[in-house]
Image (cartoon, rainbow, N blue to C red):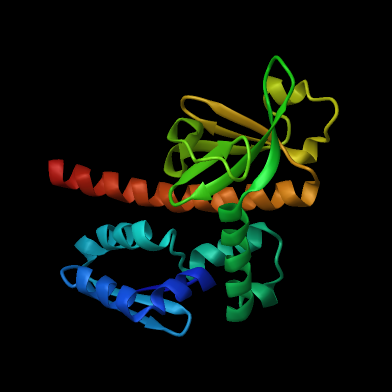
Length: 221
């Protein structure tokens, strides 16, 4: 049995009788699916659990277990009382998901040339950057969250080291195998929150990818 805490938006989607009935019907061959208060409860054969979670996330976005949320809260510096409180866990989860899915305004830095404002957001399992909040998400300007190699705080790249007009605490780099996204934010608190949140999303999807690859290797063996 696997349990996941639900965001307010996920609960709203699942509160639709038609949507929930369709979900339950679609998951019959995986196992059973139930919603109890603020939790989604999945019961399935262990060999089908990962596939079931990935199918759920295509409908609902990332679904988080308590261990993941507590780890993220600890990285954000939350108190022990908060990390042990279900209400505080839900508040934190909603704020994290709302922040990255709504997006934020950053400056994108380059080795040469002036920085340009970009709107950065998470949609499902990808991180996008675009010219403005209303611009269309383009896959060519995105990273697969599972394949981000590192999220580095501070000025670790030449593009950011050349940015003399912004404090180090307002900077971070998102590194993939093919490219690096160098960003600075309007204030330190915003940037530090995004670093924690994106690290959590990166870890979440990377664990799934690793589990999937391990499953494939077992089949090959």
